[in-house]
Amino acid sequence: MKTTKILALSVAALCLFLSAQDKPKTPGTPPGGAAKLRALVISGDDVPAHNWRETTPVVKEILESGGRFEVKVSEDPKVLAGPELSSYDVVVLNYRDANGRGPGEEAQQNLQKFVAGGKGLVAIHFAINAFREWKDYRNLVGRVWVKGSGHGPKGPFKVSVEKGSPLTEGLADFEIDDELYSALAGDAKLNVLATAPSEFSKKVEPLAWTLPFEKGRVFVTVLGHDAKARHVPEFSKLLLRGTEWAAGSQKPQTAEARKS
Image (tube, rainbow, N blue to C red; front, top):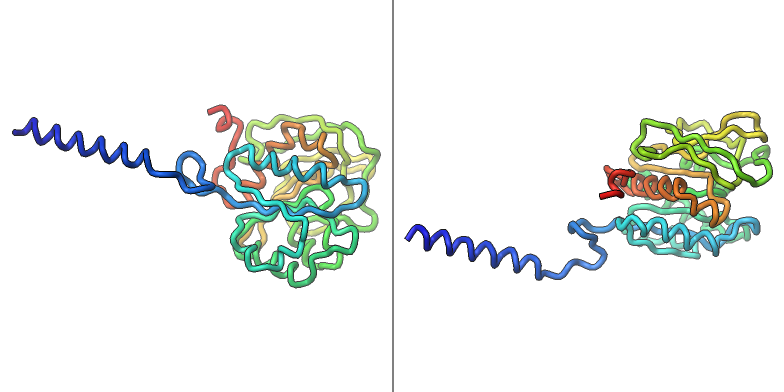
């Protein structure tokens, strides 16, 4: 009798296991069952020297490569003004309103509220010169391009990676063919992740950083002039990890995690 009961329980357990395996996965759910993070990439405008049509697909590719993101790209920055913004975990700005296509004051306020309430923001390259009439944007991203900012000729230089952050774990110093933005303005305290000495400013300049904004998280990298620069493996890893962190991931993917 005892053996019969044990056998019956074993069969029941097996049936439950097989039933669980047959249940369809929720769309947008990665292996392991956790819902994907939602990223909204804002693009569609920049100065002529920055080919957003070329770089935006690279950003999407990088974010999707980790398997944690569902990515939507919008070429209309006015989407930032809509109520649907709250459905995203992070906004990624691959954008500079160069042609009078600013999103408007309502969108700016909505984005600020989005981050302050606990969501994430990522600014890439010349996005630090977006929203030039928006005074609070400087506090949001930490540093902005102003009159007197600049860079030397585009070319190769060595980037020093700061240690001690989960976002830089396993990353070595690297070389990139890029623009080295210098003499940016801002007073916010930055958690600097990468630097390089600038011939333009004669100073060591921050090239990637994080900072809090009220309850939210902001990641900025001023690297990434073109698709070639964004395909540098260390740039890709740092962008992915920084975006995961900004989106609220408590454990951005590290080099060791990627091997498993």
